[in-house]
View 1 (cartoon, helix red, strand yellow):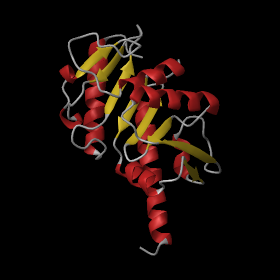
View 2 (cartoon, helix red, strand yellow):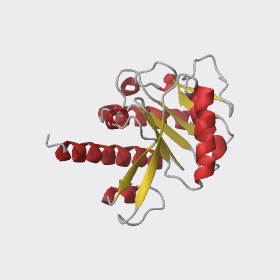
View 3 (cartoon, one colour):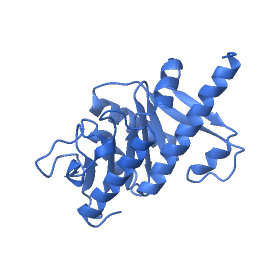
View 4 (cartoon, one colour):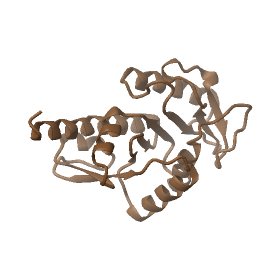
Length: 208
């Protein structure tokens, strides 16, 4: 958790540059946030290219997502604030437009989850200490009705108990979170790797 807005801005600028370098932030897609110690949230502004982020491209909102300065927050700010309300330990949320997530969720058009099993990379997720396990990553259909999507996600996460700290939006991308920006970024990277593995497995089974 960050005490000073300037520190939060520097953190989000740096992670934006890293995620863009990995191909996870095409055009001006995605949005990233961290929670400050006073409960305010630092979040990237709407329409900023993440590979060219500057400190002024990060704004402050309150716990309800209301802007605290004269800048425009992302339309998806409510998906960030809903996670902060739900989990007291979460202090960072990353939303990326992953090619693997977009491709796989469109291909599995009838699925509401992706099961990942037996991968060594599963140990990158908090609380997992062995490859000999499986996880479910929930898929939600894309919609421009962000309040409704946030309600659906919150309801499902409440019922899940201790879920993997990520979910997918079909044809859109990934939301991942953690106790700090490093943990959230690790979840993004691990999930991207695993989804690509699933795509390559499908390709081999099809003889491609």
